[in-house]
Image 1 (tube, helix red, strand yellow):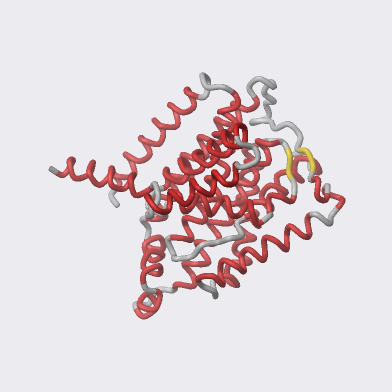
Image 2 (cartoon, one colour):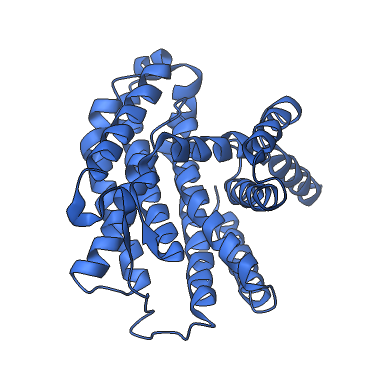
Length: 321
């Protein structure tokens, strides 16, 4: 990809971030919260999409989601660290390091074995967390109010401040991931997805690429867990439960692996469907969510990202003409 492409991407990202930040001033607080939570889930799903580009799907991203959430929570309650930006960054680094440790083990497996082993790690962590009373056990614990570069916003603007941070974070992550996807390891991952044996014959290492992808996925999962915990103001073992991991897979399937923005759009759709169905159909919202997923798989088998890709291809074709 040329420098012009990335320059345009950065300019477009800054413009979109600016628009969303301004829009946040005029939308209701409940929607600000929903978007922030969707971004948190979208970050985790981006990790799964990164793995999907290499032909793998993790059913246990709740593992790093919980680690990131508990890291931010314990730093806030035990160490007195309340700066949201710093907590997100530390959670990203720590869970990325955890991913680097577990990555070589998981990278030896493929298909359902990779998925189920990752799920096993998540459920083991869930079992451990509910037994540790020192950190709240099954009830979890409450996080202190977050600050932003030493400033504690008023209660009226606390949600908006976190919303702004999450929007900026999304823009930065999206640009960096697009750069990675177009890099040599990112393109090798696509080749691994198609024919791993041929990639090995050509001299590239599918194992190393898988470890790298899992490390990135872990870091993004931890950052999403920290953002979700800060938004909710509460951390509990449900972060690591299998149903939570299933929601991340839901978003990834709905978005597909062809577009980064599609992941956040899919996460927002999930949150909106869950919010409205939970409000108007409290006893059957899971059924509505299931039907929504089935229809998505039937009518959009390649995910929402396929629409983004077609649009960009047409746009580039017009420019070339």
